[in-house]
Length: 340
Image (cartoon, rainbow, N blue to C red; front, side, top):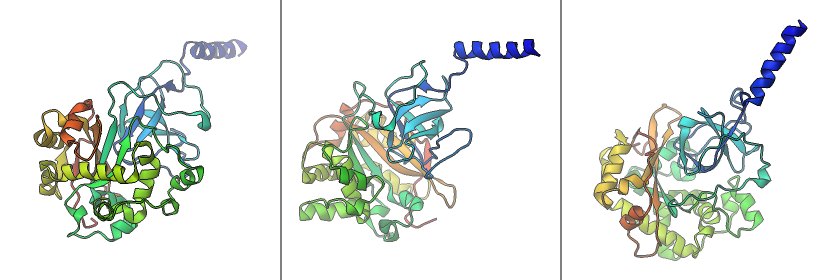
């Protein structure tokens, strides 16, 4: 018995010394969620304090994989408790960074830092939502209760946000109280956004989420890192959204309402509208309709590079950025405005 016990112990020790007991493989860069997926504290048990999920189109700091050929990624979800969470690799894609063969040591949440930017990364990301799909997942939102078939959001892209890069470039010189109200989402307690009347009127139409104070959240988290005033930040974002809605890409979406649309078709439409190669700067994110299980196209994220101003060309900004090999969600339904 002693001999057998010693043999087992010896084998276990040898495995540990040769790396066989590795639990995590350190990684860097960003994890971009292509769908809404559970973000669990543990892989095997599925324990999920706070019932945390990823947001489609959102980037998260990538910390580790569960092995050399990972089935799960360890990411940091700001505001979750704990922040370190596991997601399945097919929930999204990795942007930038690299893997290491060194085991990842636990990092206290207050010491975690955003991943360093990779060369050639976009300077900004423009996030455009397909509002009917968003509302299938959040029907209780004020803006979703108010949506109508005649509304702007029924046939146009809506503005989610304009996000300075790299991922993690958040909350620049923001007061601690405002940051605390932003995450978790107590957006109505954030300071109002001060805009010219015409800009406010357009923003309330193009960003329906202003009914839930989305504009306050976008300014506090992202706009404060833009380097311009609130007026300039939202004006620039509206100009870019206006260009997308005036293009044949929006026409494609309206023609496909109620039907499937592929990422290849979307990227080809961007090539046609904004120049060959523009589509390679676009990622598609999908959401799952909780009532029917349908996969819906929820958001487009556009990588942009170059200075953004009142007369900026969306085509030039797209083509100045770097291509992404991952188109994101391969296929989804363009959701009609009514709840399905």
